[in-house]
Image 1 (cartoon, rainbow, N blue to C red):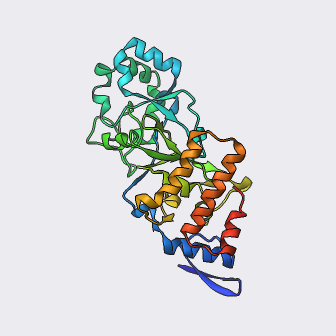
Image 2: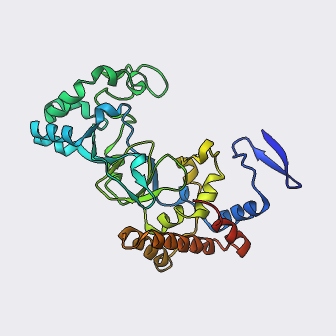
Image 3: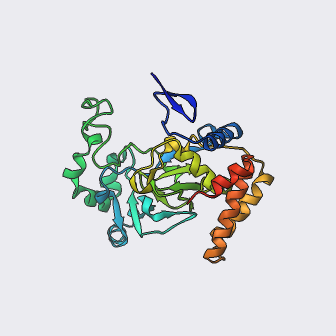
Length: 306
C-alpha cells in the first residue's frame, strides 16, 4: 500500500514500510547525498548485534561482592563471569563501568553447570521459579511446547535468553562500538575487549575509529533520526535496524587517518571541555566534506543541536 502526501508543492509517495518523516527541501537533498555517497552498514563486513539478553537480570547480572563470593566458593566460577556494561553506562566516546558482572550460562550449559560450576548453579537455583517463568523457557519461538527436549521452551531455565552460542559470545571479546538504546543524541563509544554489553544496548563488531567518528557526527545522527520517530523530550530509539541503514563511504587506511587522529585526541582525554567541543566540531566539518555537502547544507547540519 502506498500513501501520497503533498509536501512543499510536490507530491511524495510513501510505501507502507517507509518512515513517514516529513523533510524540508534542504533536508531531502542532504539525505539523498548521504545515500548516494555511502554504502549502508548492513552491507559492510561487520556484525551488528544486541547485547546479552538475560530474560531476568536479577539472576544473571551480579555485583562485585556476589562475584567475589561465587569465586571464593569455587574458583572455576571465574571462567564464566565477565564485566558488563548497561546502556546507561555508555556515553559519547566513553563509558563508566558500574562494577557489574554477567554469568555466561550459554545455550546447552545446563548439561554441565551443576557439576562444573556448582557455586553458580546454587546461585541460579535460588531463582528457579522466576527463571522458569520467562517466555523463552515456556515455549518455542513458534509459541508451542518443545516436545523433543527435556525442557518445554527454546532453552533450559538455567541459561540466558536468546540461546547464546560460542560464536556470538566470542564477538564480545573483539574490538567493538557500542551504544545505548534510548538517547537524546548519538552516544557511540569504543568498548574494550573484555567487556560485555547488556541488551537493549547494541554493538558493532569489529569497530574502527573512522566509523566511530562518523556515527557520533551531527550528519549521521541527522540521517539515522530520519528513519524513525523522536519521542517526547527528544529521545530517540537507536535500533539496530536504523543504524545498519546508515550509508558510509568506504575509505582507504590513509584516508581514515584524519578521523582516527581526532578520535584519539578525545579518547586520550588530554584536553579540556572547550577543546573537546572544538575537536567534535572539526569531526562534524570533515564528515560534511566527506559527503560533499555544499555550504548551505553544511551550515544547516552544523547548526543542529547535539
